[in-house]
Image 1 (spheres, helix red, strand yellow):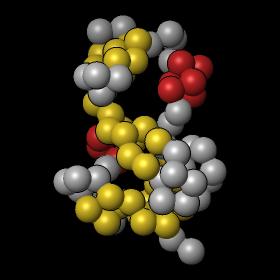
Image 2 (cartoon, rainbow, N blue to C red; image 1 turned 30 degrees about the horizontal axis):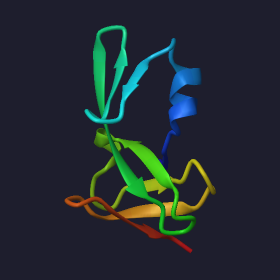
Image 3 (cartoon, rainbow, N blue to C red; image 1 turned 30 degrees about the vertical axis):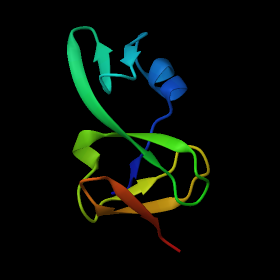
Image 4 (tube, rainbow, N blue to C red; image 1 turned 135 degrees about the horizontal axis):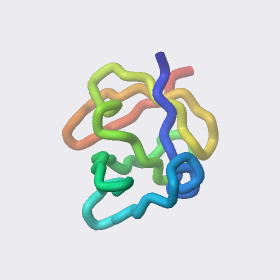
Length: 84
């Protein structure tokens, strides 16, 4: 299954007005905290936001900005590679 990165606007639409704290890299939603990590898409160079549980080696992620299919090739620091 391919995970899809979320933009901050998508996070706001999908949840009931969560607070997004860029400094803490968390989505705060009704007392629940979901950690996220930001990364740069190698295809479009835009910043994308990925839930931490989807940022594991070998996982495929769809860029929320350009739709490119990406693969996690390094976990720390997070590094993505475009799949052709």
